[in-house]
Image (cartoon, rainbow, N blue to C red; front, side):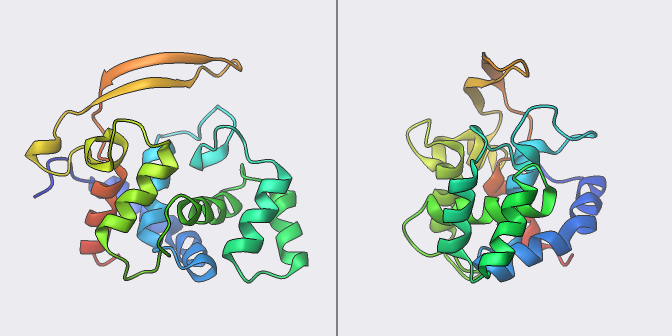
Length: 190
């Protein structure tokens, strides 16, 4: 079924930080596999990303007001716990994972739970990335490598250039889309 599959090395990296994703699931209801898929898609590289926004690539970076709003709306954290995460900011891996889960919830109307339908998860990933390409099914961020129909999708748009500006990209995407990663993680026992 999957045209692009996670490697054993990639699965091991996800396994190593799975407790952070499970914590985000406990706090927000978003399946840990969805948070891991966003992490994979946003910054799965040998070294941490050099651009602002942390491992979950918040662009623009979440300001403290937005961070508080997300945590108050989508978690049951106390005010003191919320302030602890706001102090850490979205560049902190654990806080970033929780913000990413909250952001996924913000970007789709149905409530995300571990048993939610695939269409809701696709819509959340689509919203997380900005709703380009006309639909989740046509978005490389969401669907690349899922099957033969979604093979070698082309990324078009702009990305941070690392110097405060943006640069245009139009390249064949060689990474599995977030939904592709999510479904693979759902099928594995890790």
